[in-house]
Length: 284
Image 1 (cartoon, helix red, strand yellow):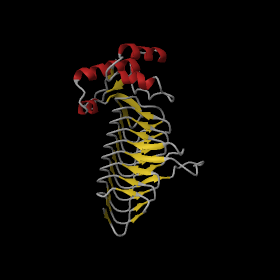
Image 2 (cartoon, one colour; image 1 turned 30 degrees about the horizontal axis):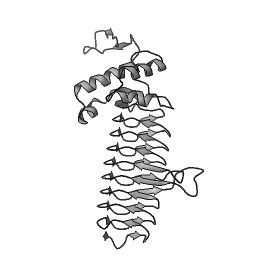
Image 3 (tube, one colour; image 1 turned 60 degrees about the vertical axis):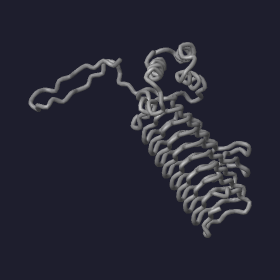
Image 4 (cartoon, one colour; image 1 turned 90 degrees about the vertical axis):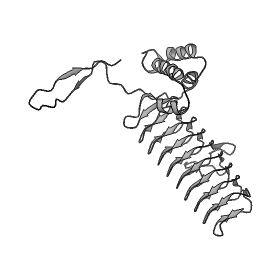
């Protein structure tokens, strides 16, 4: 066991023999540090926190802090972190509010500098939270989602699988799977095609997801009819996740950013002496 002399590690903590704990770290009673974990300097792993194997935690991170809540209980829940995660400087992850609940982070995630995971969040596998991304309490993030810098997610919202959330977004509704959210407008601007290709989705699967996307955002149907179309037309495969996700939303879903039909866009001519032409653009 490689523990720096300046680290404070409780004798009641469970620390794997091959874990590395750097200078001025604090590991409290009841904390669990799994095999091959590396804690750099000034890391705090508080009571009620379990780190699975091969997690790398960087300087100043605090894992298992008490929930930030005006009615925080005397006996909060736990933090459970899976395997192979990279948790960068000054990340904070807070324990669940209720004793038998847990804030959960899956496997192979990257939590960049200053990101925050609040009480009772459930973060899937291969998720990336970039610098200063903020998850409020009870947020759920699906596998392979990407949340860009300084994005803030309201409590109880859900981010779907392989969704891409742009920087400085302010999310107060659910983000469906597979879509991209523009950071400036906090609206959906299409499928996350780059993420889908990187995840191994072939062109046929992407085309099917595009067809389902059009049902949701382009059909003009009522909500109940959208759900029925998704349920009947896409019962299997990746697109089936749309119905599963949308049919269980409690906060509604993010709208699409589209210009109104028949909008007029002025195009500036290169010759200043000539009047500016106007072109009417039809949006599908």
